[in-house]
Length: 187
Length: 187
DNA sequence: ACATTTGTAGAGTGATTAGTCAATCATTAA
DNA sequence: TTAATGATTGACTAATCACTCTACAAATGT
Image 1: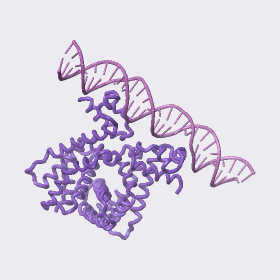
Image 2: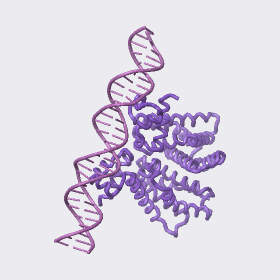
Image 3: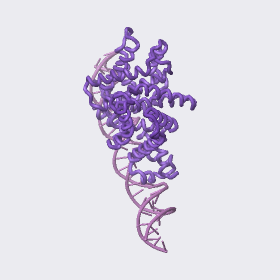
Image 4: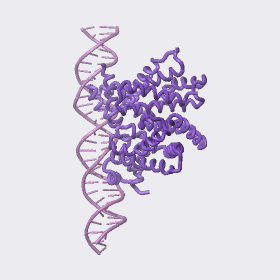
């Protein structure tokens, strides 16, 4: 692994444990096994590093979510697959998922431009809009449906992550919780 | 308003805007109109102040939630009232509600003892357990139902707070969104 | 072979921070 | 009146932080 990846990895670990301002850049460099100056060679400022880490994680999650769906699936199957992949990824990458949450509820979210935020949700919003148009989903505001699905996902993650279930039990819970949200939003 | 309250008020405003470590105690004192030393007279450390602020806000929210219910209500009415009061309070106290979320997803949550956390959720969990026992709610794990309701509430808050609806429209949305979650969890 | 860019190092710097402290001021109690 | 306790102040300090700078090594292009 190259030094730049090591820096991101170290930053993730420390940010999740100690928070953004609670983690000095010197500690990140130390944890990554590089010199102080090296960190600032790759990221001009600490804020740059934070944003880069967020974008990196979001990209990885996005790739995983949409890598699993294909055109032959029914609408319900598509949503279920995205829901499933998201939770499976989240449970396998808890630090990353916690980081996303921490970032979202922190003032650092303002480091992202509005366009960047919109771009991230766009694909999801399109899928939901399509579902409404084709009468698969209730005729509610797109943003509201998006929020409902997202917060349900985060909630289920929190519940599963805070307990200590077996892999099989986790899978069962994920399936059941999709049924719950699906009944709530389907037409 | 006494100086101690001014300090909490100033801390809330600055923490929500700049984060915990992003807000120096000197700025809090300045914003509150007191001397540096006064802050440390009331709160031994910055961490103490953060926890005190969290407890203060939680107490205010709790008081508001449970002040509105009484024994004569049906089970559904009780839940609906709590849901309603929570969202109404949250929308009228956005900084406070954002602070709670920020605190929950931050490493500072570990400053709270497990007993304190458990104590806070206990009343809610009891109500849910009662609902399951009396067949008002689905027979799912209490913690799961709690998580579902909580994350739904946070989601709806985020949706309403991020838009600019009239008071009437807000009320309508809150009512409709209770119907959604109620259908999901009722027996 | 040489020149240029890029990666890496770590000591150094000026600014900032949480928390202290000694000195007043306000209030109450004996 | 006097003593005692608590409230308030702001200058001060030791530590810490983000970031710079200079030097050197490695890679790359010509």
